[in-house]
Image (cartoon, rainbow, N blue to C red; front, side, top):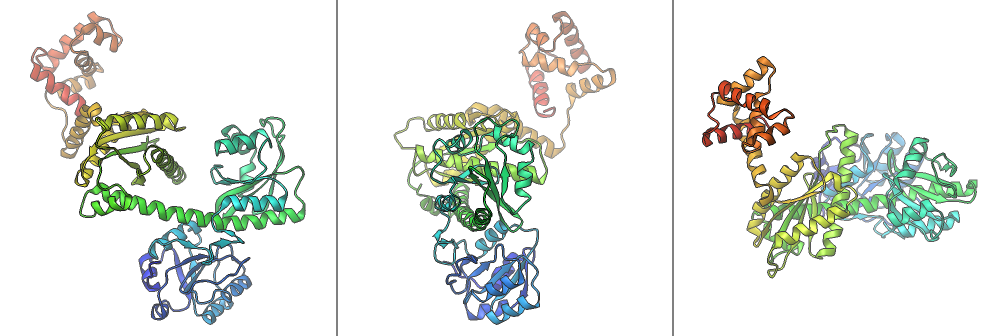
Length: 539
């Protein structure tokens, strides 16, 4: 574990995430350095490693805080959510720790991620005992079985978007919805629509108690068992939910057990997500460094296990949908990460040493190809098409195949070329498409010429400018006539059909194009200049 001083951690994070309420950060720096990030579990209270930073998730009551501060050993700092009164500050002073109060609007997950990065990116410790509530930390399947045993009912643990994270034993033949959920790793959309329409999710995520779900809601198929569900939250942040298939309403004892289980599940989910985020950040950093092709490129490839052989660069992205709200962007980011995870799993099946990471809203993949592969880009394109074909969101995603890089110094150029292809595919707005540079070269040139024209403030001149001015004054269509004729390579009948007019009418308009625009349509240079302006300056 990398060790850093607490003052440096606080300086790196600034004052936006939390503020000190008690203790002296500089004193911690004198005594020792901090390195472990720990989630406090009131149920276990095991030994806490010296110098740890403790996240007091779910601890709100002042008496609970005082009790916690008496059980944290030689921790360096404790982060709480609720304001710290004099009694709590006094307990922190007696414990010799720095008490930090987290900002009310910052989710625990974000705090954990930022702290973990500032502490050096090490793993999130669960009291340094690798257990939470007596179960292996982060083992959601063990947790699901433990909850099922307490409730005497099979359960599932799902994320905020109703994707299946884990399930207990005893699911086989339960009912149609549960079987489909387990097999598809996602609650079917048609069930989600019904639950949302009847306000089930509003009730679920708005409460900290179990919610009974009626299987007879209009729109649900017959034969479903009743459900008892509870949101899993860390403070105000909803992490997911637990769903139990029950034969009868939960008793008071089992309802309390499910409520306690949700608190424990929050600790496990935080552990899983924090560990996953560290791994993703590490791979994203290495892959990004490798793609830059600089001095650290070779070392990054070594750590990714990709040095010494040719690789093809792949770039995968979602089409833009125009949504700009915070909620919409949060969903898009979650979808990008899901896309990245799916692509990583698929490429790992193709080649175990492939590397995938989400970098600046684009999912990049490095696919190793043997020297014996005659057409590595063709092979990569085939793999990419198969992946998009299997993808549920293939209509919203596009995939660019970059050139094969035989040396690490070629990776930056390969990434650039893949990015240029990706830009063309996204500009076209049609999902489910895979392309190589050679297939979209002309479009790349036009887009980049358009960039240069915009940067220099270029506007149409000559014939195009004259025709545009005439069209604006007379509400005519001479520019469209010229564009259709050029696109049809001078074939009048084809061009006339494109703009939905009679060929004779089109010929008349074409003569007006020549007269008004003062352009000789028999001159190849003038035709090319007009076509170039139409493509570049008119979009």
